Length: 333
Length: 234
Image 1 (cartoon, rainbow over the protein chains, first blue to last red):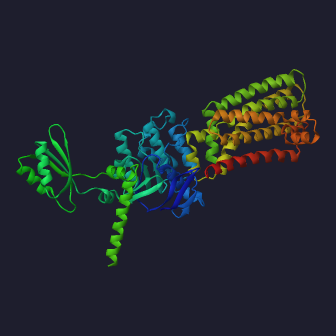
Image 2 (spheres, each protein chain N blue to C red):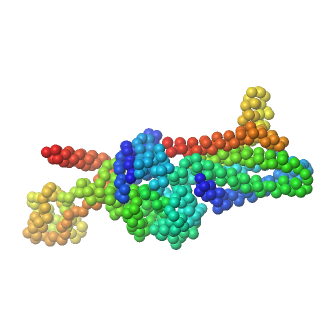
């Protein structure tokens, strides 16, 4: 549905987007993740034809956005970072304008617009002037505008910015619903949002794609599975003593929460050390309060991948490369 | 294009700009009518239109200042440029909407020739020719204002720059009269838009002059389209 090939945007002296390529199939919801200034909005502006690319190409359903813009653009609904609203208009007036502007043909115009206002929850304010709306409602009108004409592709740049927590959940559900019939790209720097909605994540930093996979696979790949979290009631020195004697522990770190001692334990690879740790602690007459595997969130991965010093990224990319080669070798055999 | 025309036209009346333009234009027209026609008791609109062209220099920038500057500032251009319409359609929609407002106010001023026809016997043919000329002059001004509006995202800058350029255009003729080097004077008066207005004043609808006015209008509309297109490629 969407194909991006070697897309590059160069501004005077700096590269905003550097040679990125990806493909999005029909019906996917893809999350575009990156810190501020990573190139998310620039990429989206190129996908929608608002700005041109310095190099590379974008195909929407087979149509090149620069060569056959009319066909390509008619398949896209775009919600930019700042919703493009005419503040002197009323919501219905505005949506009517967008309908005509897009030259949409969705049967009954009035019904179509009302349906969209219901989906986005702006029916109760439909006759208000846009300038009098709160930020959350403006965001919804922006989303409504993108939905007009029932485009196959929706490109949403930070759709939940400025919404309160309830509205965020609501809009997320709307996006999930829309994902059943549309292909969606959505950008965000809020990770829980991406993992809640998207079937695939593209992480971008400094204009480059640094990771691309499902949220689960990313967690597996970059998460540290061999980390345990232990909470113990007892004397710190004693804990230290016991911990240092357990053979399956590679390293550990202790901290005191006041009442309990918290230990973050790195276990040697491939060993389930939980039993040994539990036994050893109990044998030493220490009370084990909690023992669990440390959960890996997208947050951790994101932070790892987009850290200012790129050594971590490099490491990860290298290990990934090595793993791939290994796989290849195995399959060759 | 229809959608943009409609929105733009309506917008003049949603915001006060349309009312200010029409109200102020009518007021000035009435004053000019009294000064140039009623007071000296001449059954000719030449003086009226000559004075009114100066008023146009002030008022057209008010009409055109926000056309594209505001879109850029409010980022609503993202909606227009990502919609399945061409840049030409967008710009023409805006141009025609502004031209329509201007046409509307000209129709309002018909009250003055009607008054003249009641109290006197002016030559209707000449008045028609003067109206056609004045409408075309307005189109040239609007296209220049539109172009300048595309260059900035600040409405004030857009208005003042348009005003300055239109003023120079109107004054070119008198500059030419004061230049002693014949070639330079010729070039300057050739560039002058108002110098060609003479034909309309005496009732001649000279095709060459009409084409000249329309060409300049088209040229600036074209510049506007190119400016916006080019901005996408920076």
